[in-house]
Image (cartoon, rainbow, N blue to C red; front, top):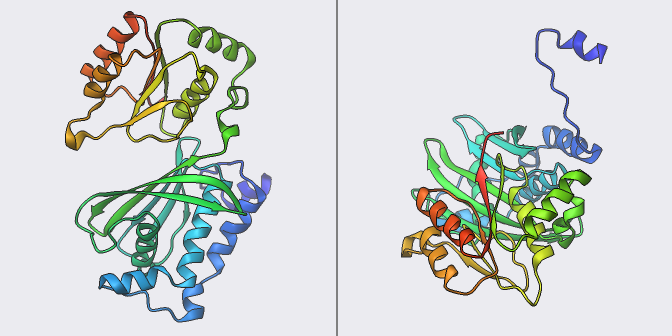
Length: 299
């Protein structure tokens, strides 16, 4: 500690708890420069050239390493943001973004193309936002679903990847860090026959995971459970899960109106984003349904 203050006396030092393997991988990423060793031409413009570039061994290793590091660090999101001279790769850990690496700008097209290829997206489209989904499995990581979003920016597309764990153990209510007293109070609330239960917090704080743990407890043959989400983040057996599609008129509000007519016992609304959805959710709670939802708050 004293050595850190001596070397960085004029800087703010923040201590972060991470696994040893995460630190070792991060150090390797700073010193290993596979592009210099292999002589790969990172510049590509045509769709076929981008596809070929996305399959080059160095870029496959780099993208795989980003995913592995993110999972080891317990990140909820990966942000890949091109700048004028380099690319910032940031992880959201415990609600805060941290810069993990800065690959050179000439690798950006290959990184973006690799992620789009994995996500089943249009590699040649750079002008419009796109969404995709990746399913990652392997011996070095647990199975995870990755939700991909791209939007065009001044220096290239900003890519955000939401990491969704598929491990069933994730949905065990007793293993998400709640204190015994809090867990007891929560169980009383979601075992009530009707009402509304809101889980609130910032991005990556575990709101959706908490709701799915509750759903896992409530899921039984004698209950009808319907969810409406944007998108469906986890798939659970025994539930009817609806994916919001605003482009065809299936919004949270419209979907919630239809759900009420399906004779549900429990309704999960992925997020209450507007007054109309809030009013319908409260009405459903007042007419004999248990409604679960989330609200985004900064703290």
